[in-house]
Length: 510
Image (tube, rainbow, N blue to C red; front, side, top):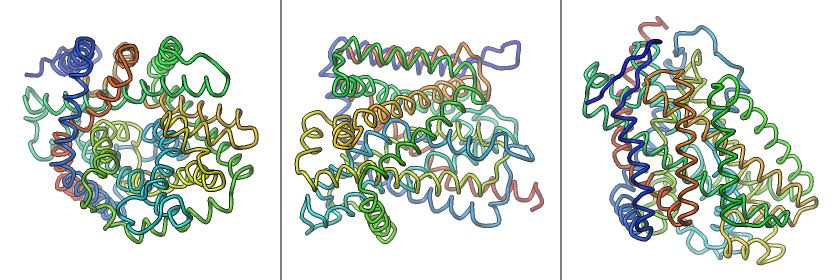
């Protein structure tokens, strides 16, 4: 099945995966051009089916991954050093910066503003009896946001799958592809001319491409809105397309330079920029309210951790929030595990678990409290000041509305917009690299292939913007559909990750 074309430097391009995954994206665009409503309706139908029948599986899988990762990280297996290097390739700050910027992406800015406020205005069903829009609704609103973007979301993206892939690639010299997740179970036969292997690779590539194209498309819409609100720049399809083209050009250049230049530089500067924004908001905004709200809401999150993550009583609400986000992260999981594998050589299992499943979610939840908590505070002081913008123009409007009510609002709004653009740049760059890795099996794929995927992703996003916003939403929702087979793939890591840890523990004589 897998037609492998050997090249001079030892790399190989899997034409089956390249043509099927790239062809599927182009087919989506063609169908959207022919009948946009049909595509949107079909994806929504499949989305509802997957959310209804696989929602519980997603929740179980996310919980299991987190607890198994904690066990492996903080047991005797935590000492295992992965990647056959005696020390890490990059510093802790650069490493964690890349992880944060790639895995958080643009959602960490727009949803940080919109989701806490949405839960504040409509209290999640976990907290019945609490009146919306009151002081009592603040901590539940933030805690519900933490469920969607907290420990479980991060654990699925870079723990168990990463351990299995690093074992297969660095310790057993197998190609770095999504199918390598099945190597501890099926052995060499999954790595060669395997129909199942090709299926795994294709679905993983399509899923992460859809999940990346969606945010790029929305970035065009959101940045267009932000520039219009802040500086009066016309918000039309030409400006939106120009923004996307600019992002893709920079992402392509960065992807061509590799992890140790483009991705690393952008991630480091974006973390520094984010820290500046945090400092500015704390100084100029409601710092005491933010710290009090974070302490209380994080306590609620931890205290009700199991019950909130296993909540099943309101499937319609779950489909719009927790199950949607869980499926979205699951769709990213195999390719993100590959990316974390690529940047984590020389790291111990304990270091990876601590960075990905502990530090990153704690930082994320605090960021949500700073941005979203500020919006909630403003809404309580002046009802409608943020909620009207959110209701009329969506998540990007909430972010701009929050910024505009602060001193130096235009500057803060621009910095938030710039942070979002760099987040999307880093994700586009990283996923172009990772898709190329999946097609070649190499941790350092051809520059031309990285640029090709960055360009294809940008082209599809631009065309979908021209077709209409619903086409972008349909493609982003499609990642929830592809999460169905991907979830079954990630479920195998419950067995394979502990198994490879036992093998490596013996081999390293720990």
